[in-house]
Amino acid sequence: MDLPLLFESGSMLEYIHKIIVVTCEEDLQLQRLMDRNSMSESRAKQRISAQMSLESKCEKGHFVVENSGTVEDTRQQVLKIISVLQSYNTHWKMRAIVGLCCTGIVSLLIWLGTKLVQWQQLSITRR
Image 1: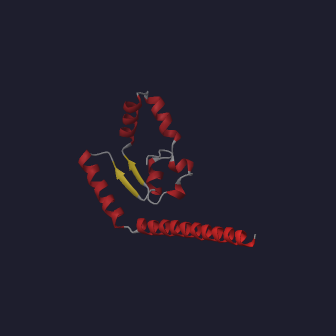
Image 2: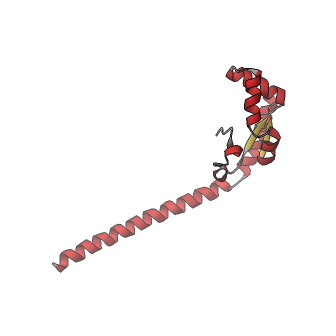
Image 3: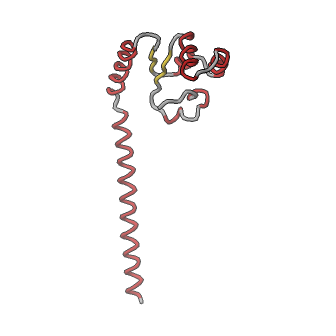
């Protein structure tokens, strides 16, 4: 999920378990933004200054990928993060919670359906 204003807005933070911040040298960030969006240097600097600093984002993130080097350097960092994330068991806990909730809802619906049928049969026999 790509959320460039994640920390600034704060609205999605409670729904995200781990945050990976990708950072690079400031001059490289400026050049990449200018190249990607075909914008002037002053406009790119204005956009960057409107956002939280990369240092602050790095402090708030759980993992940081330094993207100033080669593609292989970045790839190795990402692979290490994937390895760490795969070692967490949080997804199993979430799956168990969702499974229990779904089972509870289905059980409740079956119970309510049974009670409705019993009520209908009772009202028919009373006539």
